[in-house]
Length: 254
Length: 302
Picture (spheres, rainbow over the protein chains, first blue to last red):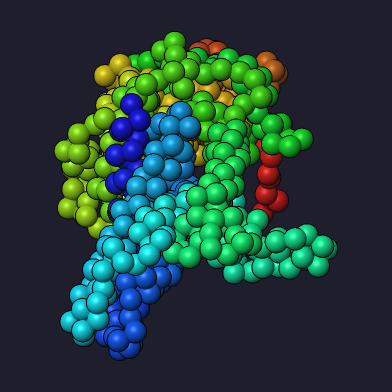
């Protein structure tokens, strides 16, 4: 039964200290940024929309760190060779891969949702205390959707890390690709394509498209895929990587 | 019972296991021997579906490994004591294993007590010695009380007490009717615990038989004869076709003649014998002789 495999994978993910440390940093960083900005920034000009932007923008790091947990969840297995007792205990490799994907995604959803709720609530409380009027209902189009969207974005990034881990079987390689992809690779590729005459190349970069999920202003710019289409596009690319990695893992020697 | 049929595994162009077939019977300890690089570990990984063989099947009591719904209840395997996350405690390592096969968490404490790690079960594995990791690996094997036990070099890193303990455990398990397959380079240990042997070289079966049959077939047999007048006996022995080698002034080692034949000859020549004993070759000698032509890596003479 897959529930047993999920339980097993849940025990694995929560009994590695590195995951706990990464999760604490992933939660603490956006909270600190939001608290400091709300406490030290200008309260008069602060709005709920700004706070949403700050919350979703700073919690992109949360998504990246959760992606590292997702990658290490599988690369650590190959690195320490625990993939062998894992597959010996559960010979159906698809069951193991599926259980890992589920656990990784749920952890990402819970952690990111916690970050968004805490960061927005604490930020709003501080700003209100300083006399600002913070009302999510008046934050305008896309604000609430961006808060949900960033949670989904984190889940997709965690799956991306997992998929890269399946393909590379190496923690440094998977983490390097996960971080350099948005920071470097997409910029270079989009730049090269633009020089080659491709219009709006940047909007077709998967990570940039996916980042619209957490952007309150997504869809306003004409050169963007928008929140839903961008999110689906990023999810499709991520799914393709996970499927490729899963096929490789199911066929190769453990 | 384990039945391996026509197992073949290649790594690139190198054939690691070539059409290997053998059976492992329940109720006995079967030693799995072969020189370094002979394909023992690859065979074990293929048996468990970890490596994908080109062809061939392995059946555990009639089922392939992938057909086992909860394999830890049927097959317990320790391929390498290092297959553990160093940052986890022994207890947590076993807990994820147990959970994957629906075993209760308290079973992990039971097996950790059984292997003598009860007092250190919450310590992280990176603080463990190799011997302690072997014990943890064995705890994982025992977790589901399986009918079949497969161990690859379980004596690595164990002190003499640990080696004796693991031997007693394996003999006990075989005594319970379980199927036990164990590879080891500690041939003296193997001679003490194994009933049967499967010997392979360069991925191919060299011999499958009992330990006694193996030593009989490949071992060096001689008769040691001691007498104050040994020189008077050497000449008639050699005349009868025996090969005689002096051990010291009063003793010789004789091949191509049995102890009764030598005794009769000594009686005929009225030579008093102080010793007349069969010298059976060791398992190590037999193993080296049987695998001499298939050694992958050989050291130079010293």
